Image 1: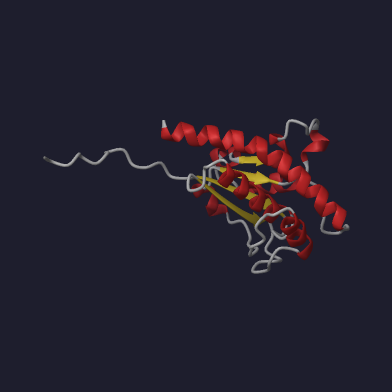
Image 2 (image 1 turned 30 degrees about the horizontal axis):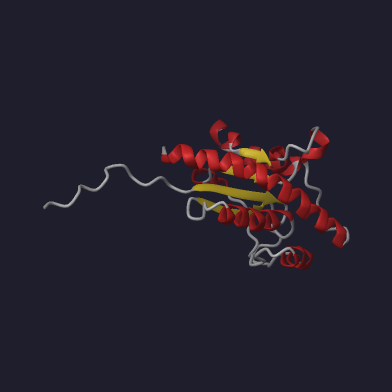
Length: 177
């Protein structure tokens, strides 16, 4: 008996998300770690790629800030991270570029070479239904503050990642339909 013919339809590429803050040592690695766990818990591992970067390269090659590591570890999230700078050519491989505040959003839109690239940029807290009003859409930079600021940052990131998951899940399901 002849074997079944292979499907002529190629497998859908994973949906790619990159979180971006300033130096890629506080907020964006926190969002990357949280969202990677959310994706895994939703059973979408392998269908969604999660990454992070900074608008600037000051900390390239560095680990996450020790306070970020401590907050993530105490909440049970992965703390493995190496900082890097966002590159314009990444837009081609990314489906969603998630800025942690409006300054990052503006910087990323300036880097975008096409309107389609600019349309990929979104604010993280825009996915959090409890973040009402333009002033509530930034995840404040905890770098110059105390440990409490990092804990508050984690709460904001966790709340937004749940809404982000809904959007990403819908996109992933649309690709496989």
